[in-house]
Length: 78
Image (cartoon, rainbow, N blue to C red; front, side, top):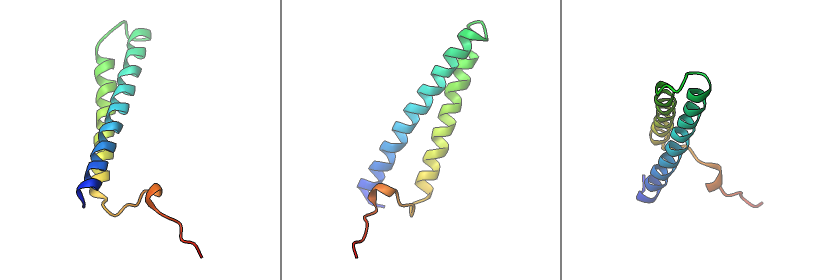
C-alpha cells in the first residue's frame, strides 16, 4: 500500500468519523431534549454509536486493500 493511498484512507476515515459522531451527537441532543428530560446519556449513546460505526467502516477499509473505488477506475475505449 502506497503512502498516498494510506493517506487517502486515513482522510476518508477521519471525515467519516466526524460526520457519524456529529450526527449521533445531534440525534442525542434531539432525543435528550424531547423525550428524556435533558439527561446526558442520549448524547453519550449517540456519540458512541457514531464512533462505533466509524471504527467499523475504517477497519473494513484498511483490511480490504484490493477494493477498488469507482472514481479511480477508468473506462477502456474500444
